[in-house]
Image 1 (tube, rainbow, N blue to C red):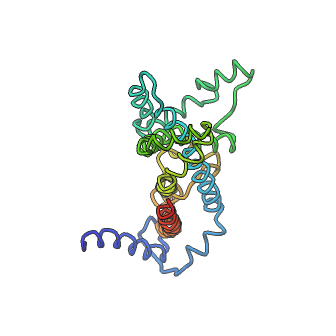
Image 2 (tube, rainbow, N blue to C red):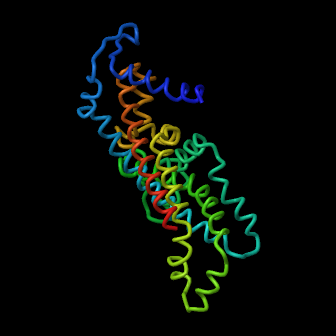
Image 3 (tube, rainbow, N blue to C red):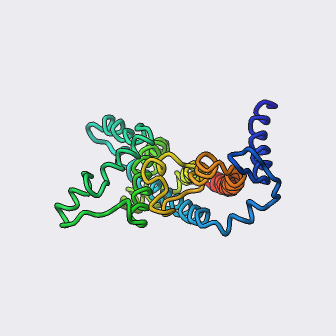
Length: 274
């Protein structure tokens, strides 16, 4: 307990101390600036861009992962030949290391040599420029993230679907309920606690994600795909501005804490109601 508390509390306390100081000359000198790093953040163009895209990235990614995760789980839960092979194939994107997937899609979506942009040229008559267009780069990051993580979410939902008694579906069929009505009246209510849990887990996980965006766009073009975790990395390890990097880390920690508390509240509420 003491070891756990120490390993969790010490980095936070040390980060708070660093956030109140300004480092210059690669950390050779430091100066106490109080809340100066925090008051500077609202005027920092990169920080504002990181906040904006972090929220966009996390919210849209999580919603799409939930939708595709449930749809894939429904398909994998159906009774068809080769479903065990299909379940194994489904996990391939998730099993690929994130940085490897990022560099692979960086090549696949390249506007000159990319496979997808080549196919798009054959079909539509022009090559989309993905990584130099802010909107294109943002959607590329989001969709690759969904492709990478939706299979894992599908496996968790599949386990939830298999725990629903078949008697409920049989009774609904006798009452004349079609597939859509059975989904919204039986399936979805039964997996709501799982949806809340996975949503909270993935939001917290993706708020602090770094490797996919670093490998795919490195935050560009400009700061279009900059996220808070990447901003911390750049300020701390590229520019050696440890004070500002620590201040951004505290903001990131507060954001994760708020999301976690909301998730716990919703989970308890839906767990009781279910």
